[in-house]
Image (cartoon, rainbow, N blue to C red; front, side, top):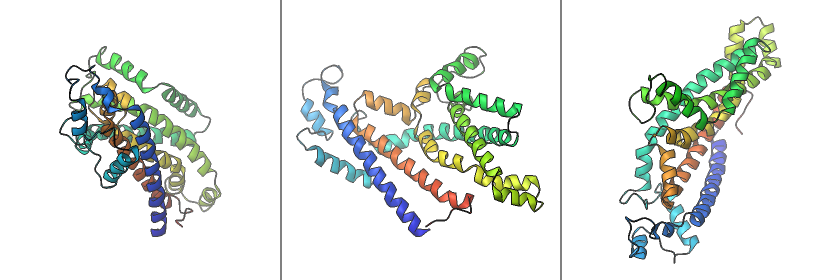
Length: 310
């Protein structure tokens, strides 16, 4: 186990370095902070541009490699730098301030998606080629086909502007998270349902399942103790990156429902050419994805006894 963890940590560290390096090169090329101070924004005077950028740590005379090494050194120590747009605030503080909104919506959405997707997928696999199977997979395909930016306004139109039972947007109270959670959960529930069905169909036809039945074990025990552990491995694999993306913020849903999460802040940072904030969110998301993937890799051995850590 120790050697396995060290190998995985080394691999993920390399992947994080690659991802953050690519993000830095793209952001440094596309998000030139000086372009924001070209006189198009009245609150910022055109005079004193160089002094302002220098105060924020932006100096075009510094070589790109040197600035990258300085930034990467901060990332390795957990310091993502200071924002250009939000004066006096560090990127760490901004992420810490807005992450709870995204994390709450994302966790609730994925919990709902797991409940619906696992239940639908298991029942569809056990009742293969039945009316429920066809209906569940048809609904799942519909969920995959309808994007968030279409489903969200539809839900607002029906439940907020039509039935007047839920608020259309803004953060506040239990009722304010229902529509965002449903909008986020729909596509994930569809994926989980299809993955669960495929995994369960494969596992329930395995030799060890037939052996368990031949020994006279109860069908419920066969399903829950032997079949389910192997059948949900595809869902576990999908959960790592999906949950990381959800917790870090979903841009479309947060914009539709005016949720002040990381996704919304990320869009504002791009529009404001706030390079440190963009890079900080990208680096944070990369690290989060690697951490969840590491947890998923470790969980394989507990779910499937055939998997060994080497």
